[in-house]
Length: 128
Image (cartoon, rainbow, N blue to C red; front, side, top):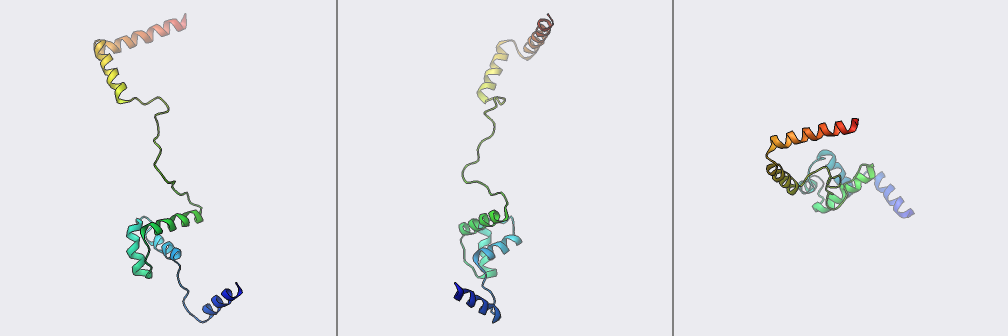
């Protein structure tokens, strides 16, 4: 361990440029192009730093950098569907059945009249 530290200290003091790691290169490119997909970053890394990485590795490094920065990272897998559990949404089948019931009862105007009568009856029974 001491030999490595001595070699790196000697390399720094000789004026040799410090070799850029792959993750550091990805970090610099991502700062310049934060919204670019990994496939677009592959040629940029090759051109600017001479580093040949595949898109999957770039994506992996991005996730690692986000975790290191404390930013939320998306979870793997499919996105869970929202709704359906509350019971407030109606399915197509339920809507078709409701439309059929409205037609069987005499149309929208007749059903509206029935709903008003039910509302009035509820009020009367609530006051009684």
